[in-house]
Length: 168
Image (tube, rainbow, N blue to C red):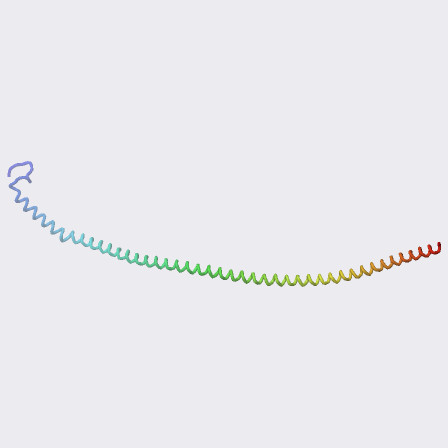
């Protein structure tokens, strides 16, 4: 062999280098294929199973979430309708109660008005009777006074007539 700075570039040793390269490559390839790659393939398969299981779980949870979302929407709609029915029913009952209270109050007011009217009529009749008795009493007094005055006037007139007849 000749002395060169780079022995690997010596053309005379190319055949040996190529031979040992293939031998080393085959040994390394066999070692990687038998020892290292099964570990990587196992890890890859394990990772693939992990991802598939997680995807299956995600799909399952997504279906469950969609079902719950639909169920939630249905329940919200049902609750809204039920609340609306309760409000309408309460409104109807309150209007009915208001009408009943209004009717009861009207009857009570009418009864009180009738009672007050009756009391007023009794008072008016009593007042009429009192006024009539007072008028009668006043008439009696007035007639007594008039009769006394008439009598005095007549008496005075008679006295004057008598006096004047005597004077003449």
